[in-house]
Length: 500
Image (cartoon, rainbow, N blue to C red; front, side, top):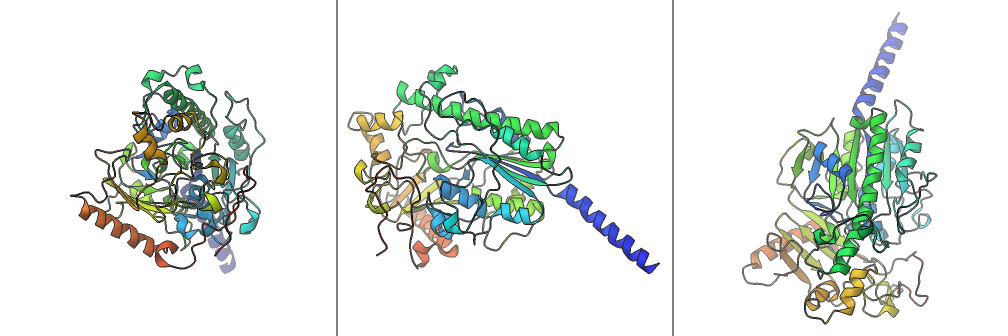
């Protein structure tokens, strides 16, 4: 009888654990676009772009008003998302076209250990090489790539991202939990010229940020970009529809975001809002209190990794120092959520010898403070294309009609000041008051009346960098200018300098 009782008790415990696991462990659908700024969704106020999927997630969950990537460059940003750490803790993963070493835990691996089925489609971690870091599989998960579609325009991949997600779901056990990374390559350049006009976008309604000249060339370029934002949103909508059809949408944490900002001058590859502030909406009926809220607290995308693990009841590795968003899900207000932090090292190899443009920034609701460690370097890359890996001038910025126009007219009245903001050198310290300067065009560092604010933000930034062990602050080897660059070099004479 004792043996029977023991067996029955063990069975009950097992069944209880299984039931609690089935109820408590949410699925995770992480949707990430490539190069989309915060402003370019309907829910965030853009009058032209159509993003019903993002808008639905925001309306039925949380819309983050001050959400920031950890680095305005795709590989490092994705490394921070996966590891829950700022880039300065990730060694060579702080650079694009690098590797993410296996010693850095990722939320995907921790969930997989806990029994989650993990997969990805489209652009996951990268670009870079896995093998030098001791990995054989993309850290975002096994790839699902079989489904294809006919792209509506050139520059859009033929990957059927949502179809591949459906294939992945067909392999998930009915009682199992999953974590899927749906990463599009859109709206990364290039864009088909005139796609925006072809789809009926009214160029007169396009919102042109004041960092650009306002003319038909720039308006059309932005419209073409918005077409690709909409392609991403369509994939999110289809993926959510699949979940809804299977009756598991409400059991799934749905996250919609981007790795960094728009591929335009003074956007991508800069720590300003047009480069680092990204859309973020999260839907999870089981875990979000009072959905439909907007969250003003500044957050980083590296906060997602510990959030996913905590939501799944999985221990968060000590090395993951991102902050779980669970308190914000519950509606808690905390003074701790008062700043986001952004870093930047080497992006596209746009300077001689593989040098980057190292900088760090603290972003509060009211101010952006930037510290540039090497202000003598060209922030957007050298004007000499011969020293650039890509053989283009100012190579941190992708080639585009907007960039071409601004370079060709850089000495014209009405363009010169904007061209200097985009391509010129910057001082060691920058400070911007966001209330009257939302696109960070007027640096008030050193100005009368801002001395105390500048000093306070400098102190807070460096205290955070010291606490999180940034080598540029705490000392030790600073290797980012010398790590290998695994990208295809158009410039055969370009190479990374040897370490001194």
